[in-house]
Length: 115
Length: 111
Image 1 (cartoon, rainbow over the protein chains, first blue to last red):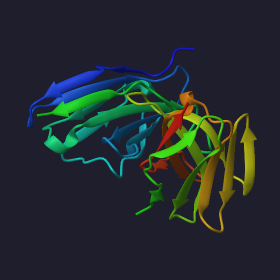
Image 2: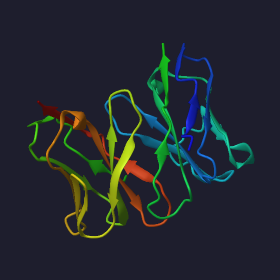
Image 3: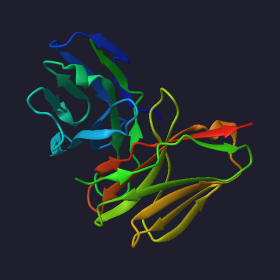
Image 4: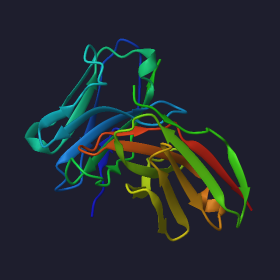
């Protein structure tokens, strides 16, 4: 079974530039998550999708971050414009269904450096 | 603000010893509790989850939950150098899979 795929793996940009990350979840997984993990901290949920609908985006900085999950499969996370404090690893995860202690499977992450 | 607290460590134990990792959480509504292992530069991987008071054992790992004290722990028996990693505690509400993570405890197993 293929795991969660993410690209790019690394990205370096200057502040005020824009950047986009892509995630392809495990086949059949209805729920998709984007997390931000700053060095030395645990992952923080940015947004949760159930199929192509948003379940929770309460911690997404909506003035600069946006995310979509077209057709309930792949997802993209965009930052525009980027700030220095956005430097982090962006993790995508997926699970079978939302609700209950279903295991979340994480992708390898995208390491973003904002200069 | 729901919080999950962990001692950042590092926790150093000799090979073959028992490693004890602890976590406290602030939200009394939390129902499910997870331990993830994260190697340096890698993504988190689930070790085990628990949602009933008491102990749950899986191989060398035992998770312990005390909801009254809002405390969850992970014991690793016969620790191996390959167990050296950051261990993340995460909690979620009963409905929905939103996880709140702690900052993690660094474990170092010395051979």
